[in-house]
Length: 431
Image 1 (spheres, rainbow, N blue to C red):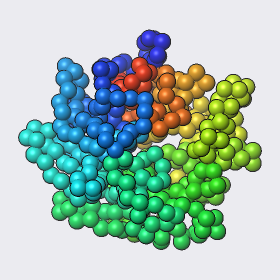
Image 2: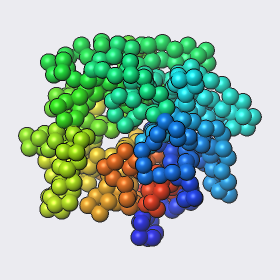
Image 3: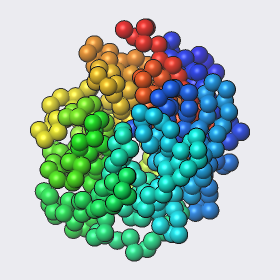
Image 4: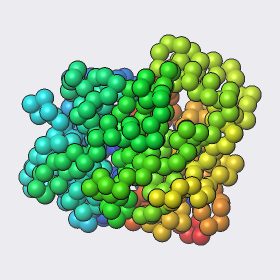
């Protein structure tokens, strides 16, 4: 399909797209917005676009019936961001009768669980992040700390006590979703002391990106710390009670971004080992001020057309989806020539296919990709124009499988507004 703003291959067919009277998006790539029946599509809905979110903005929470396009409002929230929304997700994946999302109440972050049939509501006195498939446990963060770190924050609460290099109240929290019991299971001060580096004494530290493994026995999270111009990343895994911590080796030489569990024991992280000149570029371009923006603008407009795909990864020695075994370290990876660009990966339940995407190319198209791990074959499912790049309100595709793996759902801004698209995947042509 070709409409000048996006192109689809024969492997996918668009079966639903949210109307562009409003802006709609789902958020991150590790949860499916489609319910178990494949008919109800969760979404955030707002009446603005292409600007930063403010403390006065409100997002509607609801779902579309993708057969008739009717919107069903569930509630509202003032606690959301462009990349992850309000952590909206189906509360129990077996029934998909309840949804959960973050909000604030009396200047405190909470999460709301709402039954879509009865509208009955339960309030949990903490915001959620990762959630087990049965909805019984959540592993979460100190969201007030996030306000002072990166883009994954909510504007609704600004607690200046959470600003500083190290905040002792920061850490990882376990929530018993049935009893409401909240417990800090990991403290950031303890994380910093593991394989301590002298640079830590000059850095601001925070935690991000919780991902629970498929059976809900372990989770991963990022320890990020500031550098002179940007930040660096360390990746940990732990049991659901915070014990048996494992630091992924290689953090001093790798620049890591997005991660996904392949099964309970294996996971990928997109990693880049940079050459010396690439490290200089990274430090300069990670500067969020006017100088960093100038460096990125010069690179994109004047240099990028003349360098190879690998060089686009900031002059890298190697860049690929690195495959790790929990507790053991690096065991391989997926590094075909067309999988050397950072994206948002996820896997089919059998681990045979990896779904991912790319950021904007030279013409500002983002690519949707499916990798057959057994055949080592990459399928290009489509590409989507994006008018918003290198900004806080950009629209990453964040591709996700439906729960039955027959559909793929993305966020896209090809029309000038954020929209959600649902594709049926033609498995017969792939196998």
